[in-house]
Image 1 (cartoon, rainbow, N blue to C red):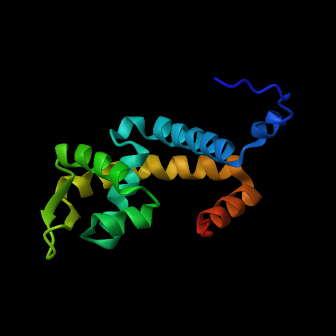
Image 2: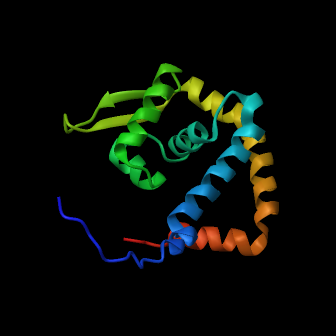
Length: 147
């Protein structure tokens, strides 16, 4: 085993200002605010975002839904399993046997309708906390292609 005798001069304090860490921390805080507001609806914000997009856009392949939500397919698949267990979505084979189509069911639409007033209240609260500048910055960040 070789031993490095050179002193480590790397400034690891730079990691304290990591953009990824900060954005994930903000996302977790916002998620907790929504979940707290929506608790009485029986629908979590992660479930609501998936269901509301299906309600707005109709049936679609998992890949397209993952792209709309900015999620990895594997993460979305885990979330969809929970929604399917609740009978809020239906999954069927697509025209291409490798593709699975996702559609919201009548109970799923009822869940969105039940949760919408709670979501609306959370949306207003988060909007107030962010202020106009924070909202604009968040929308800008969400719209950018950061690849």
